[in-house]
Length: 392
Image 1 (cartoon, helix red, strand yellow):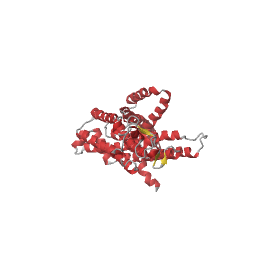
Image 2: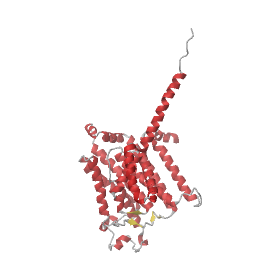
Image 3: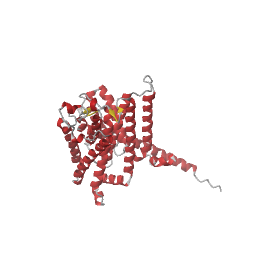
Image 4: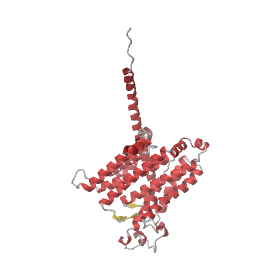
């Protein structure tokens, strides 16, 4: 029963979509072991995983989901977006607004309704766009709806005008830069330069408790697995084949009768929603969201994650995000000012020597091993089946 259920996931393991089941199994096993090590083992144990490490892993998984969103639109549709950090930050602000409304009168100024930064700025009443954000379901709906609508409007205007290539990349970067400048302003009502922070609880659970951190970590892992499975299914479906055809020859696909702009718009919206979910998961684990998340540099980093892992593979985007961010954590501890130079050098090296990323290198190595084994197997087969010599 279980084998027949998972058979579709194990098919074509050599293809980009065929790595779904192994990755999901490994992800769940690592998540379960890390969570159990944190909750069940004492801190003196060598196998104990600290709460800080759990939070760090949860942040990495959020980044992996963000990289997956970029790979969906760049790797499979050929749209290089340098503005997905904007959708990530908008999702984070949606979650941050909900968390700020949960503080209530426990803030520094003790106001039952207004967040501390509004009291400090002498706001007299809650802005209309903050209304209803104290309800989790409504806040999550807005968290997904705002980035989705923004992506739809931007995509509809850009793709119907047939803006492509570097011009589209510049437009996406301009979008996130404009949002960053807007959110820095105090009168926008989102905390200005300081952003939103000092969160207390989520759905009644203390955000500082180890169990809550574990719950957020597990939730992030589950949603990463779901988005990975869904994206893989989409790319292996007829829709995915049309998207790849648009990437490889949009004019030819349009000549065959496909509304290429429609496909691109909805794929862009899907990608933006994934990025927003990643942002919403990121904020309660990190504990802050500010306009710096809109920085164009962040969006460029996401592209580097995907390039390192291997674009157009889905799994490569996840691996790239995990490896690069782990390297960033280690490198910034040793040489904080040198990380951007190291990141730039990494991107140049990958572009020159690993154009298909780490997953591409693995696939090439695997193909060479298979090719080298085939002649020997064929020779052995011919030797074993030679006809017997007929005696006169």
